[in-house]
Length: 470
Image (cartoon, rainbow, N blue to C red):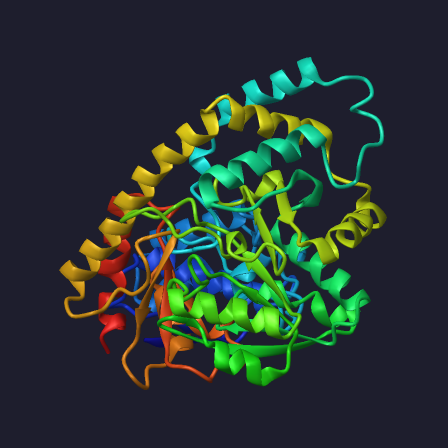
C-alpha cells in the first residue's frame, strides 16, 4: 500500500504493505528512517502530527506516537510536548556514494536474521583460552623478543605453524619460508607484489570468487583475468588460455560455489604451473571445517616449489585477531619477507606467541573439534529448513565451511529477491557479487549459517521460502 501525505508536512511517499510479515509500527519506523537517511526528509523538516499521521494511515494515534518516540530515542527526530516533530539535523545526512568495488554487505543495516557467510560464530570465540595464552606469552617472552624481530615473524611461532600445517593439512612447511601476515588478503597481496617485481604481468582469479583477493593486483600493475569454475573446480584449460602465469585459488572448498577441486584437475593444475613456470596461490581459508569426511590435503603438499599456501585464523578463531601466514615457494620466499619488512616490520610478537601456546597446548584443536560439531548441526538445520519450507529447492556445496549455495529459478531477479528478503528482516547474499560480470551466470544465493542458531535458521528460511521457488 502506498500513502501520500500532504498539508502538514513535506510531501512524501511511503510504501507500507499492510499484509507484510512485520508489525505496522516496525514498517513505519523503517520507512521513516530510510526517508531521513536518503535525504528525502531534510534537516529540520516538520512531520505531520501524530493525530494527522494516524488519520492518513488509518492506524491508531498511539502507534504513531510510539513510532515517533522510538525515532527520537535513536536520534532521527526531535520534538517536545506542544511543538512540532522535526527531522534531527545530525541524522539527515545522505549516505556517501559507495564505490562499485565495495561489497554491498558492508552497507547493509543490521537485520534480525542474517545469513552472512564471511565470518565464524564470534560469540563462540574461546575467550578464556585466548586470555590464558596471552598470559603465557607475556610471562615467557624475553626482552630480546619484544625488540625488532625477523620481519617474517617469530621463529618459535613459525616452527609451531609449520608443524601444525604438516600434521593437519599435509603441507610441506619449512619455517624459513613462512612469513607471518595480517590475514589472508595481505598474504595474497604480498605474493602478487613479489611476482610483479619478478616480471608478472597477468594473474588469474576464480570466477565466481572472492572479490577482495583481486583488488590489490591492479595497484602493482598486474592485469586481472577471470577463469571459470564449474562443479569440478577451476577449469584448467580455460586458465591456460588466459596466458596468465599465476592464479589464486580456493581448491579445498571453493569460495563461493562450495565445490572441491577434483583430483584430475589438481594434477592438471600442477602440470600447468610446471610447464609455464607459473605460481599457484592457494587460499586455504576454511579447510578445518569439513563435516562429512576428512578434508582434502593442501595442493601445496604436491608441489611446494610452485604453490604459495596462505591461510589465517580468521575462520577458526576470529578475523579481528589478524593472524595469518604465507608458506612461500623458494623463488618468492625472500622477496615476500622483504616486502613484509618494508610494509610494517612484521607482526605483533605477543599474539604470535599466544597462538603458538594455544596450538601446542591442544586448546586450539579442542576449540576446532567443538566448533565442527556446532557448524555441522547448523548446516544440517539449513538443509532441514529448506526441505521443510521449500521442498524441491537444491542445497549445493560441500558439507563444509560456513555457507551453502541455493540456485534460484531461471530468470529470477537475484537483486530483487535479496531486497525483498531484507524487507522481511532476513539478510541473504547473491552469487552475482562474486562474479567479474554480475550478469554472467545463473542467479543463486549464498547462505551462511555460522552465526545463526538452528532455530533462527529455520525461522529465516520460513520467511523467505516463497522467494526461493518463484
